[in-house]
Amino acid sequence: MNGCLGAIRVVDSHTEGEPTRVVIDGGPDLGAGPLADRLERFRAAHDDFRRTVILEPRGSDALVGALLVEPSDRTCAAGVIFFNNTGFLGMCGHGTIGVAVTLAHLGRIGPGRHRLETPVGTVGIELLDAHEVAIDNVLSRRYRAGVSVDVEGLGMIVGDIAWGGNWFFLVSTPPCDLVPGNIARLTAAAEAVRRGLVRHRITGADGAEIDHIEFFGPPQAADADSRNFVLCPGGAFDRSPCGTGTSAKIACLAADGKLAPGEVWGQESIIGSRFTASYRRGDGGAVIPTIRGRAYVCGESKLIRQPGDPFATGIVLGSMP
Image (cartoon, rainbow, N blue to C red; front, side, top):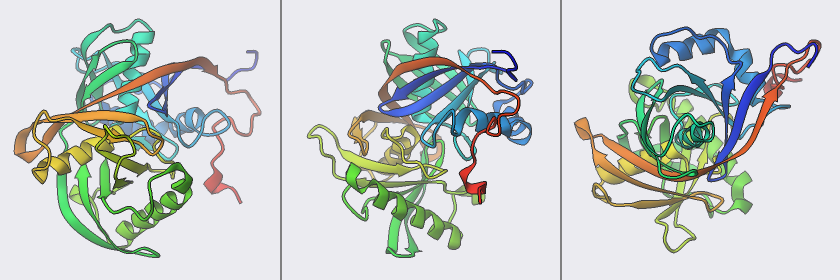
């Protein structure tokens, strides 16, 4: 430990296969106030910390980070700011499930209902047992239906734009079968769709970037309703069925009258893991999704930064010659 620039204590978990790294000590001082303001301080002054925690050699592109902070709303069990290999996330469904199981692992919450504060609003969590969690996500809604975009190499692609805590473009006709053997092809197609949205200036509300692309197809399991492939910002695909993506899908189904309030939707991921989802109606045509899934703690460790380490703040592959 001699010469260490500061150790960062973390707890690692996975939610239906998708990893979450919760920072429990050694994070930056972001001050007080609304979490949206603290996220901006994080972005402006402490991006080296994000890179240290997430990027190689300590992390990976698939990893999502979660910084625990004091909530401004004292009815909440904790505040949390999510981040990944390219920046920050307003909300993360699988990450929230991972945070809940981590808080239970640390003895900070017990079975029952709790609240977590995020930069995009407060979410409800119910710890059902040591591994299973149901989350009441932020208000989710479909913004536009049946949007056509001309995509290089794919032609005209039609999808819905929806908010589930992040902005999604949801496509129900994938370019190929949603199986692990096609992950490279699906990734390339989703990247092409994202470039097409940018090129044609197709956005979410108020010009927000649509940074998640979601392909849907038939499930492989008999008791699931759909299988998805979700490409996240930074080029990594979601190993879980994606909590915010499933929320966006639920909002679209509700808008089309294809799923009734309280009816359960089984969402399967590209690796076959599962979330179940339902919703209740919110204001202005929005829905409040409930996402249920499992998470497992898989490690506790200290991340160390030493003087002279050329990769103390991570390896940014895109910036290398």
